[in-house]
Length: 181
Image 1: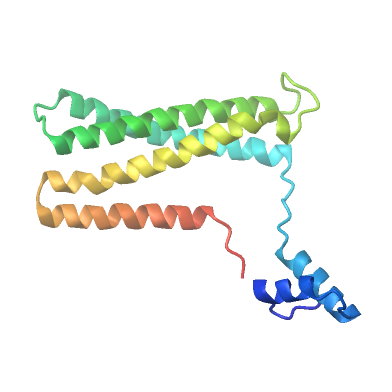
Image 2 (image 1 turned 90 degrees about the horizontal axis):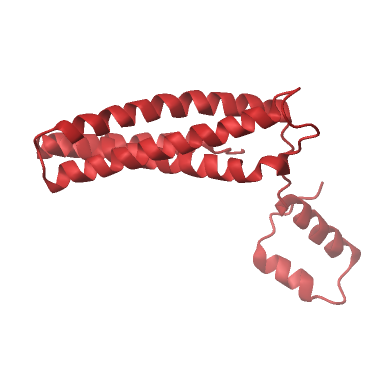
């Protein structure tokens, strides 16, 4: 496989060169192959297991967020900071609950011998998009809640919890992405 480290300018020169040689065509072909992302085919069994794990995680995080929401609702304090924490906790709880039910739909569809036969990945596209999106928004809201919580005590604790909240969110997103070497 040819790998000449071409950039977009080199690609443009190759495309514009009408009288190019055979080697330029080979370089162009290899460049296109290297820079074309192929979508990995995920099996239904894998989707089933992924949905089960996401159901578990979302259920736990939703329960935690609902607990924080309930505690803030009965709290006597009523200022902007507490209201923002309450809104963040409520958004996180709602998003995680939606994620749970979207993943239950995927788990039911991908269970062998389930209520649908001949299921493909396209059959659960909507629950997949809704489940993943609400899970990510829930994580963001939970991180905001963690970040804001320390500001109820002092500036020093607020700075600490903000750093921890941001660092937590970044590390979660980094571990959820595929980084190839």
